[in-house]
Every structure is written in C-alpha cells, then in structure tokens.
Length: 134
Image (cartoon, one colour):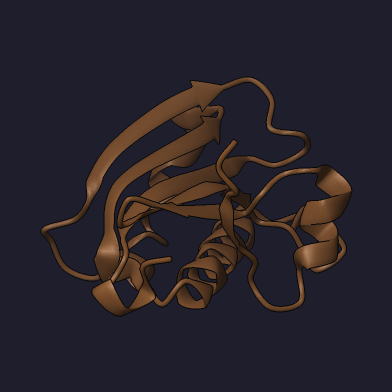
C-alpha cells in the first residue's frame, strides 16, 4: 500500500482527524482537495449563506496554501448546493472574490438535498507547483 501524502492546513488537523478524512492528498503532480464547507474552527456551520460560502473558500485557500498552491493552480472544481434554485445567484456573487477574472477552472455544480447542515461545499483538483510536489 502506498503511503498517502496528506496536506493539513494550520490549526485544523484535529477537526479532520475527528471526522476521519484527509483534507488533501498530493499525487502525481496534482493536489486532490476534499470537499470544503463553511465551517467555523469548531466544525459548526457558518449560519448566513454568503458568509458560509466565504468561509468555505477561506478553508479551501488554507489547504491550497499549505500545499504551496493558490486559486490560480486550481484546474477543476465541483460544487454541491442545497436548493440551488434559491441559492445559486447569491453564491455566485461571492465566487469572483476568489476566482478573479475569467478564464476560470472547469466547474461541475450539483444540487443536493443535504450537506450535514451546510448549504455549500466545494472540492477541487489543483496542479502542484514543481517545488511543492510531494
């Protein structure tokens, strides 16, 4: 069995250990990031939608930085939205704060009925800079 090259953002390792998953794995020059939600330091959801989306992006940014990456290195994005008909436009007003100008990464958006008390989740695949490859 190959040992996984796990990336932990500063200050959140206990949260990931409690929930029993790796926040990100380096493999073959890529960074595979687990779904990030708008959780506070204790793991509870940020109650307001736009603040929850910003916190999810901030949590994602912390993982990317821990691996030596930025949002510019992201090549593929999957988002999960509870009640997308009601939340999509509000969520998409926040996204440019993090992605900047086009072209943006590829994107798949999936409507779901439940996200463990959250309304938004984002997972990505990023290209590791050569200096950051495991």
